[in-house]
Image (cartoon, rainbow, N blue to C red; front, top):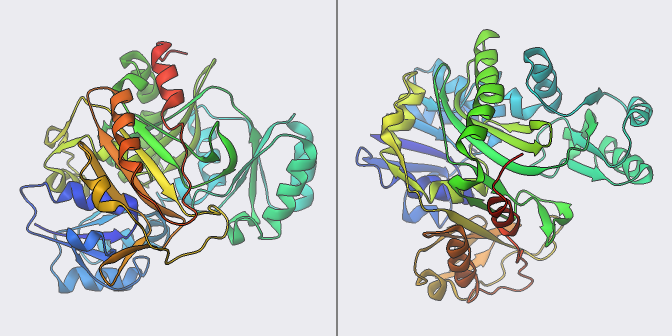
Length: 430
């Protein structure tokens, strides 16, 4: 099988690493890929969100399956272009991708199909948004409607902070054009969990649960980021709670999308808050999370290339997917200043030493190879990932892998997995 992987970040490095283990894989290409992904796949220069270019490339290379990593190509209609050209693609249509590309669409969809979520108001202008604030006692959550690379969400602790954030959103300072429409919603309390499903539009299979760490600083402080680390362990969701989420959220969403004529083929990512009143949806994505993918895929076994092909063909083969019972953890090393402005092309030291750490795999999110030396190229630079018998042991191995790595301004959270360990110790129940 010849596979084309779209994207070039840490998630795509983890996907390439997973696909390379598939016995059915013959050749793996990556558009655009990265210097790190080039050790696993043949890189091809270009824009992964250029739908016409991707479809033409798939035809020229006679690609059996295109796997879409990031959200931007899906929102740009890459899956539609590939399907129109008769090529198989793992990733939903542009219409189905609105579950992620438009927060307003997602909230209104949930209202139509009875999917539990936070109370909300959708606002198309600053005056409307300021008036809507009266309906929400602080703290209040403000979300840019469009794609904002995980940075379009603000939790405002008071009215003044909410007004300032709204001004930044509508002026384009916070999320660019993604913030021209805004969702205001109540702030939910509880434990935050991610549960992903692979779906062929009719059937689905749940993946192991994960927990992301969005805030930049220890103790869940600081600005929201694309993700500073993640853990995956079966104990995060006891079987009865997992079944409840499947029954109350996953099934209604996938059935609802199909009923509205937009069946979702690919990944349904449910970002959840486990409140005292039950699980509630915080957000949907229609692709693997980043860095959740690193932790989840570190546990992946089986023939993933053939499994993803079965999704694209509309007959999901869940029997091809197997999972290690061992938990996994990923610690993100980020550039100084992230998620704001940051320097690039800074030398990275200690990667070879870190790579020798038992049970550690390092996924490159934003690096480049310059004269045989790795340098930084992005806000999130590396995802140091480990799998072990227990979550505590996986975290210990991951942080041992972090220890020898250094680059100027390097920042990372030192409490990845701490809440998960406490949640599991308490019985992981709501």
